[in-house]
Length: 83
Image (tube, rainbow, N blue to C red; front, side):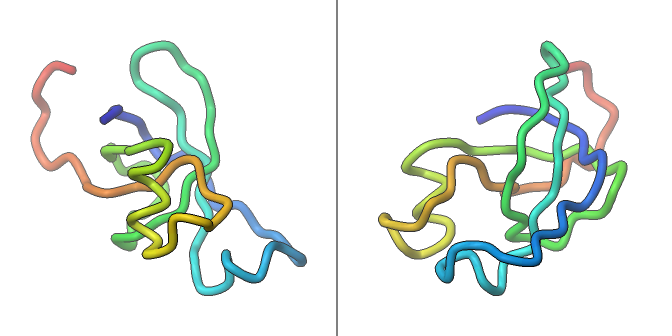
């Protein structure tokens, strides 16, 4: 699991059929600044600190192990703990 902050929405006029219904967001990892695109499974907003899972775990969040997903937002960080 990784901690990140959402920095914006990603709009795609065309995408794989298996991605229909998923909101895409750009996130920036808190431990290095790398940016990723992740599906949003919990209705996070821009500026939220979130938890990200990657790889096969992210695909399971979509309910399909064959879905072309590498990262998923799975939680919103509520407190100001040091990460």
